[in-house]
Length: 442
Image 1 (tube, rainbow, N blue to C red):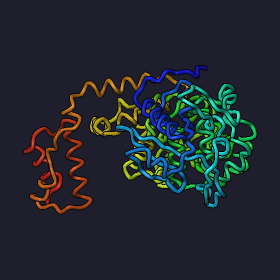
Image 2 (tube, helix red, strand yellow):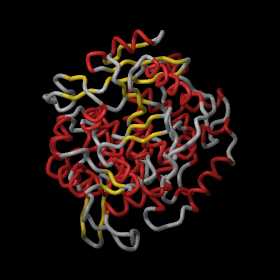
Image 3 (cartoon, rainbow, N blue to C red):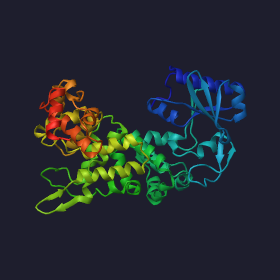
């Protein structure tokens, strides 16, 4: 492990300048937290946090541009050029009465400051001027052992901030680390308390977990610690739900879902969540008659996905995309037999590429090849864009001019005319208007 990465980039240079300014004023100042961890691991660093003995007023007096984002907690943002740096005074925390924020803070020293942090690998300090690593909690040893371990008593750390339980699991996936057994036991015991955290914060942690490379293994751990059944009982219910072996030799719905998740490549959050939920409708639709079947599980799953999306406070657009993908994840089965209108509407949809990612993951998660996905993409590429999404031959204004009143029938006429246009049965405006007059006389 290299502890002597050379200082070369502008973001790092700005952080070093802040440390030097604080030192020249007689204060202790060190890099702290994730930037130290990632520096030691050789991972990209996107921000630098600085811990210091300087009080917030001292920090504000030493730098021209500052933002008092959390001054009462000792946190000041210092601006250097276009970059922002969080500069925090060494502190000890009072009781966490809300499961997230300390009720009070006491300014302290470096050792006390790191002892309040979440995990040992995030509690390392680094002196960039003397190239010295400061480790008060065994973080260097855990980093080398690739282990996520809470600082001190894990129950105390999770009592302070319930979201730390999700963060522990997320770090295992992001870093490819194992979870310390005592830390895991504490999470399993305290898992229901994660709901004392807002759904927005839970969603953000879940999002980071789902898009990381180790998402499948992290999901397994999320399930093993009981966090999954607390935040996503619909997904936890997949375990043990058998599937017809002729179509799913890989195993039950949970095994299939994990394999599908593993096959994703750099997914967006919604693609990853759609993949996680694509078969969420299988447990409630399971029947075993002539063989195992999941009748209408795509439709049931779409409805469940809407409820889940709303629970996690997704935006309206995110919910609609999630529901659209889950509802259509089976649409390409036997795709050459689909109507041209259906295919072209799918091809034209802005979420089509995301649907394809989920379909490919679903296929690979079934131990099958994804050849037919390439065939679908080739079919789309063979159709000129203007034929996939042409200007409509019949518009609402046309129907109103004919005497049709807006309403459900109005929409039905427009869609039927557009389908006929997409399939080449209507090719001109006049032909389309004649068809409407004939098929839907006023």
